[in-house]
Length: 174
Image 1 (spheres, rainbow, N blue to C red):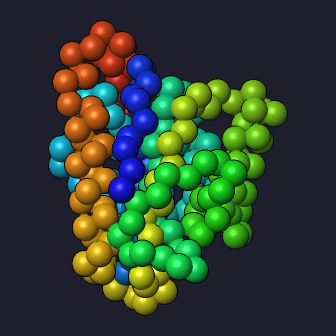
Image 2 (tube, rainbow, N blue to C red):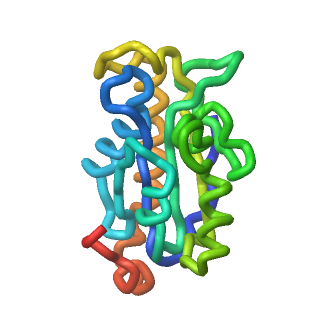
């Protein structure tokens, strides 16, 4: 598995991406639920089932954003968590943008329009087994990957809630 990069001071937003009715495609949404259960005042948690332009609205004004979505790859190991760059968000319909702008293009558009976007972007893909069958249950392997990543992210925010920079950046209105 992977190690989380260092946390950036300031306002951090986690966005769980997914489709609530397509089995393993719920991974990012379930991760957001898990993070809300163990939330820190320094981490705002949001979800999106759409991606695209909605993500610009969600991310505006944050110093760091962490995104997570299910990921389909040809040689997937279900439940494996992979860190992705803006350039390689292939395999995630909301990060890659099959019917909308992909994540990299969204950042470019925001820059052209002068919209303030996070300086730090961390993207996690959770390799999936089944993202096309209707259902709310994740495969056991993908759920284990979600649980692991939830623990890693939660642990990285323990003890930072007292930081003055965190208190200044906390925005419970998003």
